[in-house]
Length: 115
Image (cartoon, rainbow, N blue to C red; front, side, top):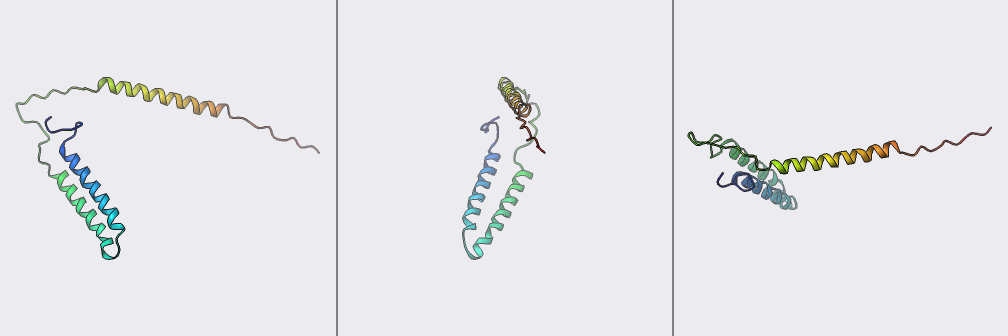
């Protein structure tokens, strides 16, 4: 997979950069006064249109070229199971703590009435 960084292509980084710039421009324009303050709406709509165009009209094909053999390899197999084991241990530990505090919650005695 040529042209990928961290398993994603350049399009994801372009979209992320676009929305970071829109966010920064939106914050800057929201501090402005007068009619410039309402231009945030146009900046947002322009970003939505650019995002829609980039998502609906991609340059690359979804399917590999015919005749090219594609081998799918799970390179993060061991890491995924280590993460699953860690998350399971944290879940069971937190469940134990919650149940321990639920079961061992002190019950205060009610005062007796004396007539």
